[in-house]
Each structure stands twice: as C-alpha cells, then as structure tokens.
Image (cartoon, rainbow, N blue to C red; front, side, top):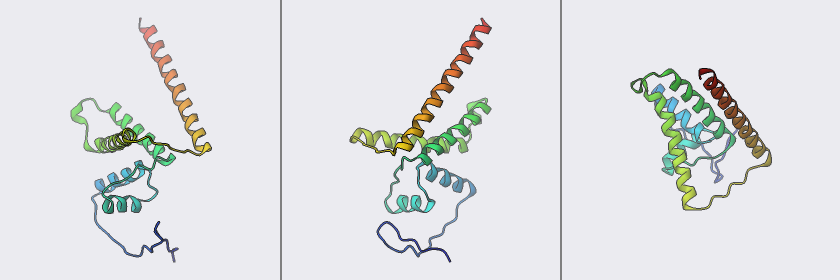
Length: 151
C-alpha cells in the first residue's frame, strides 16, 4: 500500500480526478510541467486549475529541461529547409519557454527579485556557464578558420 501524502496545508489528498488527453496533449502537458520546474504533474495541474496560474520554480530541473528542449529545437531547425515545414510540435515548447521568460521579465520589472541559490547549485551553474563560453569560443574559432580557408 502506498504512503499517504498530505498537501502543504496538511490535508489528505484522497480524491481522484481523471480526464483524457490525446498523445499530443499529453506530450505538451509533460513538457510544460517539466519546463516550469514542477516536481509532479499533479502539482502543476492543481496550480493551473485552482489558482488559474502557474509559477516557474526556477530550479536545476527547470534549467536542465530548458537545455534539453533547446537542443531538440535546434536539431529540428537544422533539419527544416523552409518555414512551411515548421510543425506545431516544434512551436509548442518554443511558445512555452517564451511564456515563461515573459512572465519572469514581467515579475522582474514589477519588483526586485532576490533569489537565494545554494552554493553547490550556484557552482554548478557557473560551471555550465564556463562550459558554454568555452564552446562558443570554440565555435568562433572554427568559423574563423573556415573563413580564413575560404579566402
């Protein structure tokens, strides 16, 4: 038997709500709750239905999901020859990420946001930043080499 879990207000969650989704809708729902940094799909659905809004959690999982989605998008964009070939499956994660970024910008403009990040998480983020900088320098060097060889 599974362990009974209480919500943040110490209430039992013992009611089940079920609904049907198409495979595409299910995929979009899975991407959205992961991109927003929610740990569970249940918490995302409860926030979106009962509070009529969702909050980006801003954790390492969210950053990881953003990176994964951007890699998938980049792969697809490299494959596409014409804008007509752009399908809705590619636009969904782009739209979701843009909505998250716009919401974060609006929140930052309305008030000063102070985010405390644990030292280990900060160190990981700085490590990723250094790797990204090295990769961009490497790409610039390759582009410069190609430009020199073409001249």
